[in-house]
Length: 402
Image 1 (cartoon, rainbow, N blue to C red):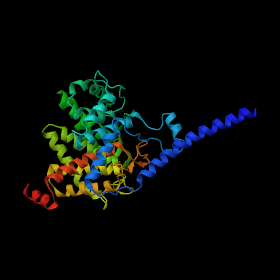
Image 2: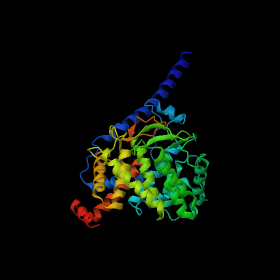
Image 3: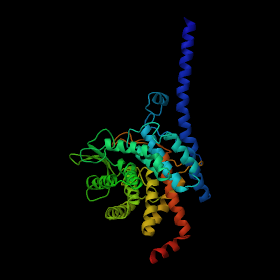
Image 4: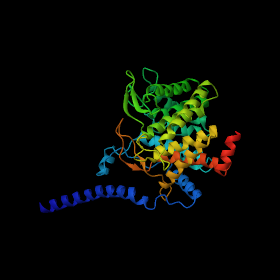
């Protein structure tokens, strides 16, 4: 009897050791990589490190936890509560877009690996998507490859998911709660819809994308401001969640901007351009003195790299559109902050984790592949800016002559 008790105790010890080892690993990996964070002597080295780290993550990007637990993480993994496939989908999509835009040539291998990882020989998803989050991954797969015909079955599967999530108002619901309109859908889905139309010669989905954006502008903003709410209820048009969530605002401006860029010239594109510039001017007031943006814009604290990375890309594009120096200055200030929060291996840190539910925000601040991708998009804009104008004075002269 004592022998059995001894072996049971030994078994319990080893199981406890395994659980504690997993917790210790994640504790260590959250802290040790921050040693000497942000100490970059050369800008080019920083940019190369950010790209190489992002490219190395594809196609199976690091897991972004949805659990808020800090202990017994192995139990969450065993129960399937550590992360979600759709969370990993938008992480992969954002990173794929950023890596591709930063260097189409140097990202060729990563792009091909990503296609092979997700798409089978028949051009369909190996694991059929069930959430609209996959639209941003589909966008990245389709936009930066010359395999549109091969990929069409997979793109059609994403369209089917989006259509299934369309509510009685004809707009897209993010989750199973079809009476709620989330801000996330704007950045996740709208640009893909326009790209799908452009690629396959259809017209139906661009109109849906524009309407999704315009309805959120009409119903999802705090009175007389451009501070968006996390979501709103369909029948009452009442807000659900908080206003001014940083990454949520990022989804809004990303949806506006990338949809605008994909649209053909016309009245809808002109309207979206005005929305983009209105947003650009409005959000400048919330940029912190150190260049970053907060988890909540109007509060400015605490800081969030994921929101700041999206704003960096956004203001880079706005400068490209207008040649207005205030946007290039906003971009450069964002990048100064982001550089200070980049680990020695090139991973962008201090990104707010995935949202638990509407109004329930993650307490984790860690790496995030999506934010890494947005930083790469911003760095591409910055590189283009630098190659055209070697000094702020030259940019100012160009603006006066434009």
